[in-house]
Every structure is written in structure tokens, then in C-alpha cells.
Length: 588
DNA sequence: GCCGTTTTCGGCCCGACTGTTTTCAGTCG
Image 1 (cartoon, rainbow, N blue to C red):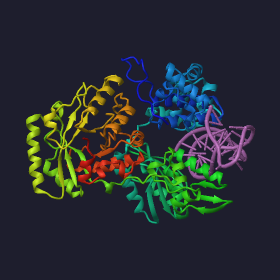
Image 2: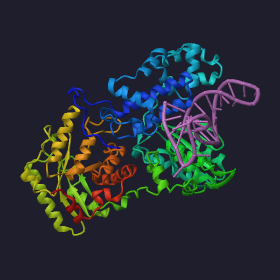
Image 3: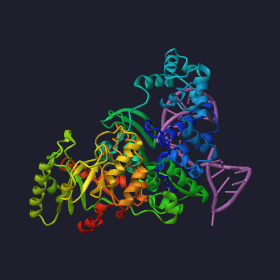
Image 4: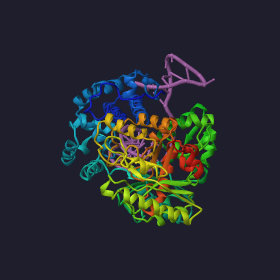
């Protein structure tokens, strides 16, 4: 699909940004929720959810497609009806169909679905029979004992509802992948030590390396399932056992994290791993392929006329439906199935292909290590080069280096370089991009650096147009080699500043400026969708740890994982190049 | 409501667990 160049003309300066794809997706999901509660055709409901999912993983801003008069029904799962609704939201900011449903049923009715155990059918009964419209209404009805009198409801359900509302229903948010990692590793270690356990693997979004993880899905290969599940339910960190059956169990840890465990036989391990790795959309799409081939695919295997033809290994499951093996990071139903069918999957970048790190700090600014310590850590990781890129003077809070201190640092780097012939320390700076788009270091001093990394650390609230102009002006500077953390987002706490990233990517690709994939676990900026857009546009990517301490050099692996989710190959990443080729790849 | 190298109409992934039932609906993943 053709990318559209800029913001729609005539956009008022005060409005930060046109309707975001996420907002459109949210409204469609909300509409689907209310339709489901109304008892609409479930496939119609699913159609809205599918469209919402597509929109969330589309990097092109729909508002621009609408402005350009593009045919939205080209998007998978979007037909004429949903295209019209998207257009309405973009043009008017409203979705009349949703608003009239909300007026009729109460705007908070869909929020009841967030209570565990309540789905659309039950919410409908609560609404119709008890007039419940909000969580407050529901709590009141439950306390009065009216809920348990309804058909299909009982005393247990009633008290579970009350408990959920008391807890503050929308459970805790998602954990950063890096936060989930130690929890997942201890669990796996615990399970592997149990008698009879042959294999224990974390599946789910954790295995797909999503930047955040909502819960953990574990698959264990073991002949004696029931006893393993019971031992699992007694794991020291478990605070609540949600369910415990003969093949699966679900618990909540003291941290609030939910963990699901599934036990399977070795003949089913691959199929189970595929199923529990997801994503749901990916699995559904693969199952559809199986149906087309008159096969049945479930978590136990692939079956033809009742006979299992695959299941022990994941690769065989893919092969049985005519697909090449799809790496977990790609399993989002974002084109990987089509690519696997045609044998056109990317050969994803791997951590061992990284030759150096182009963005780290020392204690000269806000880092904790010395140049020598950072270099030693980089050598220990087998890197060929390491760029020291402390902050520039404008960033006072980080003790940014002024002219004099930067010069002193450059001389210190020279001395380090004299000592080693197995690594090159590159002279760099994470230079502030000032409000007007100029750089915080004078040109003559920039000339003394090997390259510079530009970053936005101030004036996040500029309008989309001004923010975009600011960054484009910076990209225009021939000494700017990398744009650091291009959206400025912090996962879960700060939204990206409203910038026209498509235009930034396009410009970066044209002028030979690299885009950083910042590997700090709370940044991971660019995200998977944008990193793929960058790759598709031909922009080069620098995966950088932004380490502020020696051990943070290991953040690189989070960045590599995110890059893999963005279909990135070795050739897309500049710091897979050796030193001389890296230098040749630089601008001018 | 969407979709189509079998189809423009008739499909739309599949199974486990729980609670409320007494053979199953609803929810969840």
C-alpha cells in the first residue's frame, strides 16, 4: 500500500494529531462488545474485532488514507461497512452507531465484560432482568442477593462478581517482557525439576517476545499430568488457584500475574506449543488452512480422518498445512502465513550478528560506568566497536557535556583506543535536538566526532506539525547519523510525542540517516510495527542498548527481539556491519 | 460483517474448565 506523505492540509495547529489508529480500533472493539451483549450475530461481532486488530497493526495512519481517498477495504478484514465507519470516525470524530448503542444500553455496560467470568450473554441477562448498567449497579444487585436468583447464575458466581468488583475489576496491567523474564525463568526451573517432566517451555506472548506480557502460558511435556498440575498449584509464589483440571491449571501469583499451565504428551508437544504460543489470530489462520486441506488442527496434533499426522514437533505442524516454519516473533497474522506459504519469510536477525553498540553513556553524563569499564564490557561481548555517546549540554538533568568536557572526553577516548587493537571506541554524542530542530553542538565540534546520535528530550508537547518539522530539520543536518528513540514513548507511562513518523522514516531512508531501535526495555522505540515500516521503507536501523551501566549492554537482546518482531534481517541493521563497512555506510 | 486457486452464498478454529445443571451453556484462551 502506498504511504501517504504528510498531515492532511488545513489541520488546525492546536490539535496535537489526527485520529490515531488505536482510537479507531478501540471504538470498533467497543462497538463489538455492545453488539455481542445485544446478542448480535457472533460472526458479525468477530468481524469488528478482526478489523480492530488489523488496524492496530497497521502503521499507515488511517486518517491519512481517508484524506488521500484510499480504498480502506484493501485492509484485511475491512469491507465496505467497516470502511464507512472508519471514514466517519476520521472525518467527524464520532461513530454514530456506537453512540446510539451506548445511549440505549448505557455507556458503561461494556465495562462489565472486564469482570472475569462475565461474558456478553451474562451481561445481557444482568442488564435485561436486573436493569444493571454499571459496575456499581451490579455490586448493589449482588449484595442484595438478586444476581444468584437469575438463570445460569448461582451463589458462587455472585460472590465471585462481588470479589472482582471489590478488587477493582480491571486487573493489573501488562508487565514489561523484561520484568516477566525472571518470573518465567524461576517457574520453568521449578517445573523442570519435578519428576517425570521432560520439557517445560514458556509459550504465549512471552515466547513471541511481545514488549509486554499479560500472563504467562507454560507448556509441559510429561506423562503424569495430574500430579504435575497439583505440584504447580502448590508453587510457593501462588496466591490463588483459579482452575485445576486434569490437563490444565490456572493460578495467580502473589504479584498478580496469571499463569496458565498445560500438560501434554510428547506426541502432542509441538502442536500444543504452537497453539499456546499464539497469537490467537495466527493460530486461527493456520487452523483455517488445515480446514482447507480437510485436516483438523488442535492442541493435540494435526489429524486426517481421525488419524494424527503431526504433532510432536512444531515444524511438522507447519509443514502439514503447507507452511515453512514461522519464528514465534512473527506469529501475529501480519502476513507471515502468506510469506511462509510462498517460502518468502525473512531470515531474522540474531543477537550473535551484532558487532557493536552505537549508543551508550558513561558517568561523564548520566551513566554509571567509566569509559574503560564500558569498553571492557563491550570487549567481553566480542564487539568490534563501541560508541560513547554521552548527552550534550542542553540536557542539564543528565549533566550533559559542554564543549570543554566533550573535548576532554574525546582525548580520553583517543587514549583508550591506543591501548586496544581488538575494539574501536567511536566518538559520538547523544546530542539534543533543540526546539527549532538545530543541534545542541556546534558544527566545528561535530566535525571532531565520528558521528552523532540526535534525540528529543524536551518540548514533547509540540503540535504534530511542529514536532515533525523539528525532526525533519534535524535529519537535514549532514552530521546527524542516528535518530535516537524516534517516538519518545515509555511503555505504559508516556505516549509517543505526536510526530508524523511515516514522513520521518521516509526522509531518513532518503538522506541516509539511521533510525534507532532503542533496546531499553521500557522504551523499545521504535516498536515492532514501526520498525517494520522502517524496514519496508528501506531505512537502516541501529539497534542500540542506550546502556547507562555495564550490565545494560545486555539490553541489546531486547532490541534484537523487537527487531525480529519487525521482520528485520541482518542487512537492515547497521551495527551488524564490521567497522570499515559501518564507516562507509555513514552519510557524506 | 467479511471473504473466496473449490465459493458472490454459506461458511466463519477448537477444546478445557467451571458452575449450574442433570446433559450443557458460558467463558476463556
